[in-house]
View 1 (cartoon, protein in one colour):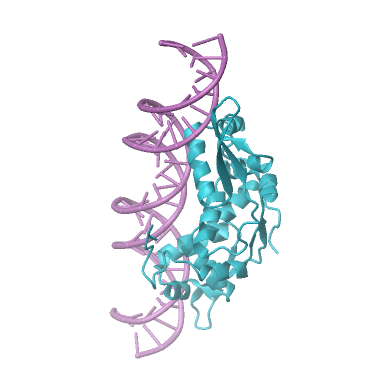
View 2 (cartoon, rainbow over the protein chains, first blue to last red):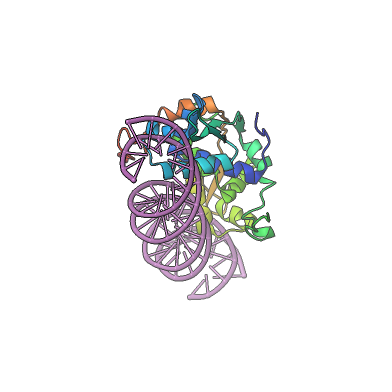
Length: 116
Length: 116
DNA sequence: TTCACCTATAAGAAAATTCTTACATGTGAA
DNA sequence: TTCACATGTAAGAATTTTCTTATAGGTGAA
């Protein structure tokens, strides 16, 4: 199971990734089984470039995982599947996560980019 | 406790409301006790109009509740406190929520605004 | 009256997100 | 070769979100 105690920044990234109807439907679809990009695009009814962007966002947040595989007839297929996450959101959980936020903190100067 | 099974749209609104460092810190602060707008703005180090906007966003999502009260010396004070929510995010929970999404569904036409 | 508090909103700049269109690569089969 | 698949990225438009600044109203006390 993925990170039950993410840092504040990680949590924000996860929430932001899920806070979008299309991405929520993508996760829902993948929860029913792994799938590759082109097929997923057809099923959901979205252009491939757009889906590609959303998949990257979800993967960056650690909510899905992609694997590049070769099909029997030699085509490159990128399969995605959901990560087995389990997040709980309560006021106290959020309060704890907020303590590890590094961005947008007026006290410490805003949004220093983390380096490499 | 607030809505353990929100609709897809409600869930997206909640996640969007929490997917912001400043709003996360607002919730964290209120988790430690109720507070009124001006004081909260000073403590967090944000302008009042900006805080006002974020508070509205959080309240619209049902994560905090505001009450207008009169202080002893007759001033209007708007107190906010956290709602007692408890959300669990797993692939299957999200899959279920996604079924009740009304916006951005290519099949049914995108994002019809709900009326009144 | 003027000041120090409290509330709220509007207007516009700035920045981030979302989406489209176009392009480039590769494979196997007709 | 050309077609039908698969992958990916880049550029710009359109939209939304974030933030600042300015404005307006209220109370009580100096």
